[in-house]
Length: 242
Image: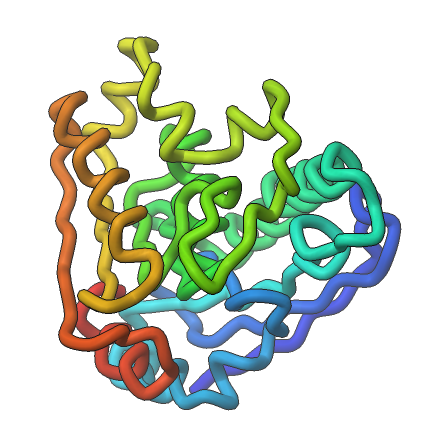
């Protein structure tokens, strides 16, 4: 399997960022790590191996990026607005630095996003905000409003609310979405959600699904047995949805 390691100094984040690329051609997938995880974890957990058949056939390229969650949403030492500002710097890193690399590597069939757990939030949020850039998005075991606090998880904004928070929580901004051009772009994108029936984020997935149906945005929602919020489940899910 073709594997590349990349590291450069991000002008948006003002620090070095790393990522791994698996595959030599095919659908280009921007793959987000789980909560405060690293760019190499999906390889270590066997999820990349679960997709190796498609990768080796040239059907799929994975771009496994790093996260800055510990500096943004999970940085309890700074005010919530500072957490959000750091997240938006990460967004610019993705849009202005990572996606150009993906195009440089060749993306004949467009770009897709995927993530598990916290990575699902990143994948879905980025794609719903910029649907014109993506042809498909997959969120597995995700929470799509980080201000909600399903036990045992906390409100990552600590009760703070402003416009930037609102426009980065899919369950919030979809509820009032009226932009016909944006809705049309969303309708042209394939959207897949998957979650375990006892996952704390189960209701979040149902709410997001309902909001999408209210705008006539076709998508797929799959419910798995138990909480399905572990790598051994994700190894089974990945070949089905990616």
